[in-house]
Length: 420
Image 1 (cartoon, rainbow, N blue to C red):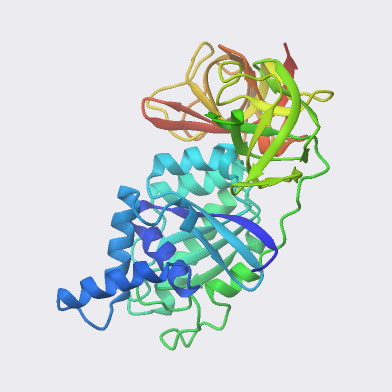
Image 2 (cartoon, helix red, strand yellow; image 1 turned 45 degrees about the horizontal axis):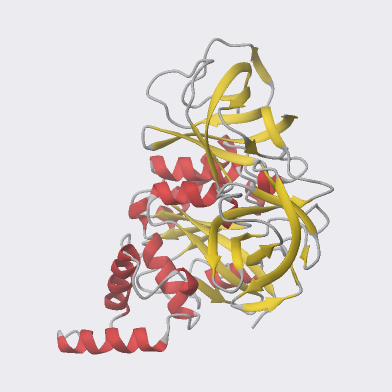
């Protein structure tokens, strides 16, 4: 197994072939468990679809993933020569947004899937916007379904041009983006260069993934561990579970949970059902803290060092990007903020300035309202205690999504926190 780990978001419009691509990546890297393949092969033969069709396996995987069977999240992992990847994949748009924002799965890089026969769709735009706002570094763009457009180079070029315009619009560094003509369904340019695209001499998708820059492990920041769940385990006691975003946790550390404002000494740390002496960024851990009971802490708390505890915001100032809102947003609006594992209703107390999204310059001071497409600096007051950090100091705990009426209204990052 390769040493380095990356979280990879697979983003793009829902019908552009994300699920098929995920399946193809798992399949090509030998990450679909053998018994699952066997099972599908037998089914395919029974149904007279012998020759073990990849597509058949894919349909089943896609269906199973929607039902949450067999291919659970543990199998959303695959390895290349350079990295072990965990897919932050989001069949549904809603999950995607939650996944992108909750610390549980901050992706380092992303593959944007754009169908050659459809080009940039509204969701493509929204996902790119989010990826940019939430600090994804590199984009690999898979121009998918090339088989549907007869592998035409000019169709590919048109889509590339369209996506480049979109990236410029949201100030994504386009120089770093690589565009690859692929067919997730047929397997073109995924693991091996395709004869169907003789006009393309760039890398395959797996090569592009191998070439991604190494993520910098954020170990020099203080420990920040957003709590996903709290369990009671017989023989151990209360066990909070979460993913370490920054810093290191050692047995014997004195920690503090905020905003619950309780603390104690770390007695045990467990990872993959084994006890470990310490854990680092990216590790999913369960741990036990002396004197902490099940009702003392909850999902959305953040664990940090007792002598450098997580910030709790009385108010905070943030830069937000409004993606969709049926009318206008004014001061006093109170939607739900999703930050790391917390979900808290927050009031937009003031709209401080409207930005020009293309230049980043201030377009208007103290505007009366903002609407879809606007970027702005706003002051926010959580309705109940919320632990959040400035993006410049701890980016992993400095971003959030704003949801209302069953959709994501906006995304943003924290500029400064005014402590309680």
